[in-house]
Amino acid sequence: MTAKTILTYIAMLAGVILSGYFGPWWAPAAFVVLLAGLMQMTPKKAIMAGGLSVGVVYLIMAAWMNSMDKTDIIGKTGMLMGGLSSVAMIVVTTLIGVITGVLAGWVGSGIGGMLGKR
Image (cartoon, rainbow, N blue to C red; front, side, top):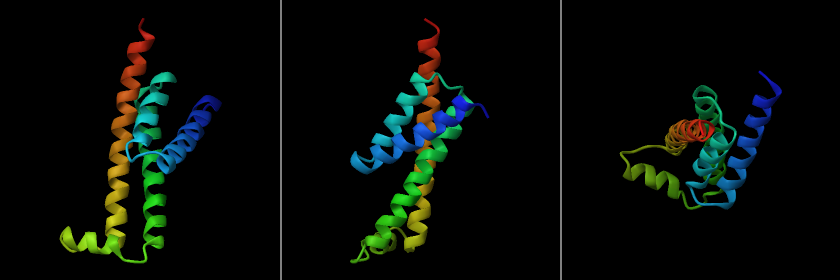
C-alpha cells in the first residue's frame, strides 16, 4: 500500500464518522462519493474503502445505540421484522452499511473517472 492509499482510507473513515454522527443517515454515502470522486480512486480501491468505512461506522453506531437503548425499541423493531434479535438487527444494519458504502465508492470512482477525462 502506498502512503496515498493509507491517507485516503484514514480520511474516508474520519469523514464517514463525522458525517454519520452529525448528519443524516445518507451523509456517509455522500461523503464517500465525494471523496472517491475528488481523489479519482480506482474502482477496486473505492469499493473497498467505501464498504469498509461505512460498514465499520454503521456497526459501531448500531452497537452503541443498542447499548444506550433503555426501552428495547431495537428489539421490538426486530420482533416486527420476523423475530430478529438485537444482535441480528446490528448485523442487518452493518450489512446495509457495507452495501451502501460499496455502491457509494463505485459511483464516486465513476464520477472521478469522468472528471479525469476532461
